[in-house]
Length: 240
Image (cartoon, rainbow, N blue to C red; front, side, top):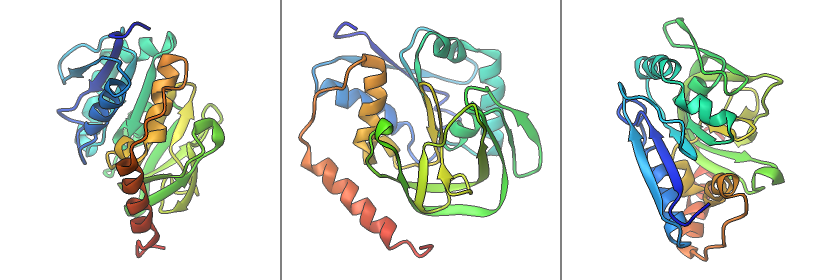
């Protein structure tokens, strides 16, 4: 990859943009710039075709109507799905997780087909999951506990074609003790934050998948301080 070749796609930020999930694109671009790598961010809005030539695609959260609209749009404009076939990275948050899955049912019991990039089916749970969440992940995904804020009604069952992102230390996540889903270079989670600002190891993992090598370390103590502060907030969440 040349120094100016990193192409990030922020997919449907006009309808999948709750909890500042678009900030994940800013985090990735800045972490590349700190390492001397120039990156571009393309915002792909509703009604526009999805290019298939990007390196990393980001999907954020949204309510039921927006989520269904996004799934319909992305099925009609399958550029991202084509990019996955050639090895592009996709990262989804909350509604993005559900859209990337096989199918999801909204709170009004309407079933929608997903994109099938993850083997995951989502249906409404008995109550909303709201609050801080901590997720333990394996060494192949960085090994560092992830922190975030979850706010969703969905409960997600991960099938044999994918793996959970990790196990829930505190919070709800998928609803069965696991959180998120991963299949190849497609990774999704319920964590807001923006999650990549709160978890730089996860951000760098996504960059590594594109670059083909671990990016150089960044000594940024203020980022570590943010992680520790959010870990303390999760520890004192009243749901624990």
